[in-house]
Image (tube, rainbow, N blue to C red; front, side):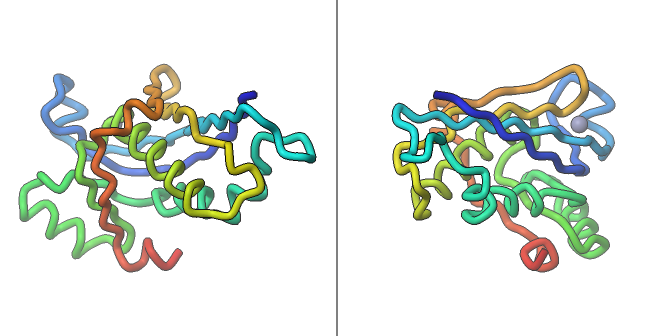
Length: 164
Ligand SMILES: [Zn+2]
């Protein structure tokens, strides 16, 4: 059985090293739409894959809230860029990967599965089978568990991001 829950966040990024001049040379924003898919071979006694209330309880909603209204940057940015972002923004996240839709999808899939494994949810057999990240109205990337093997999930959040 498969279910889907949608989350959203607004964020600023720059995708270095890609082919698009607009994407790689200018920081810009997106309204991200994220579809999270959960799968299980066995429903709970009350007939669910996972209770959406549990997602809030275990921190999935908070995870996306951390990413909202935040400046995301790759830790390979130039030192002066990183310094500017940290000094002139309350909300920022330093990422160990280039902030592409593909990498966000793999990161979220890995992070959500970690939350599921370490939390006491009713359905122990439920997994996050994939995450689809829509960066624009016309394009998305989808990551499955197999895609999470090589994604580094050691992100650094600003103090203000941690607190809200
Ligand atoms: Zn972009």
